Length: 447
Image 1 (cartoon, rainbow, N blue to C red):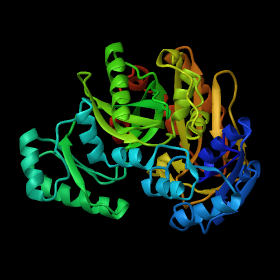
Image 2: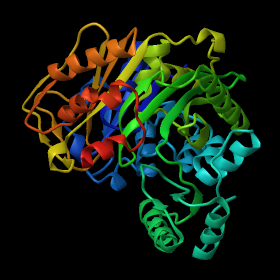
Image 3: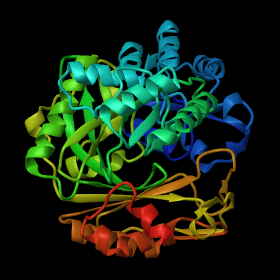
């Protein structure tokens, strides 16, 4: 087992990894930018090293500076968290070349699933359902038009690299296809440095359901059941829950088995997420693989009782998981609300600043994962997530009631947060009745 681990990340996930390592008897080295110099969680690490100025491209995204910090800190492995360098195959390869363990999949597996176009091809080979679309990247407007005519409108144009809704456009008819292709390609180039676009049929009012997978280096590949992430705005997840409501047992089993099959084909180990969309008829289609720990991983942890971060570390150290698929029995219902420093009443304007007072919720079935407290400053340079509120109860109805109570307990003074939005959504009949899809929040906000 590793004796010392560097966390190549910040905020909530950095603290999450520090806590897991402490319980495992592993020392930690945290990195930080100048903007995070006074972050309270840094004091919980055994050592903290500055890797540059506030701008992420000059600190958290600088592979050379992260590796230098790892060498200075004398660590055996690096945990990349999520975001930043977590899905960068080059970073994983540099770690390997420097004889530093990478707590995640191999560079080869990451490359196979990291590019959406390659991942779709691998999914087809593994017999995993995919949305009808192009066989690869569409290199011109004429080629996009030819494919669109074959599969039928409306169509979705998607960047082969990256995520978060960038490089995505919908064309409902031929007249708008050329402009959509140009816009998606330009946005993908600006966001990811890769203008590659592929095309697929647009599924109306889909649900977003993802499967948590976990594998080791000894041939074990498991699924930890699924999470429903349909409650989102502009492709950004707001609320996640497990199990997915209104998903038949047959569809659930088939989707989870498909996720395991795909990851076996990719030679994948560590934690990862296979994402699907589910249409109104209950058919599911592969979207992409996230080759890292997810923001919403606590939802799966609570329903299965498996600590995913500890499992990642053990797998990277070469240990077997020691569990079988039949051991992974889901219990109860978990819901997570992402609490962001944003003002929903002002078109979700970011609200960085100093937190003057904070009261964190608690009680039976409540978990609060956050790196901030009274006196903390939320910098304007990074994602606005300040915490994740997660509840676990025997039923969905009970989980919703506990979440509402916990949200009302959570007090954050000095900045605006998305707590009022979550309370509104949880009160909607559509959410309570699980009549949700990836656009239902946007329709409600527009109305």
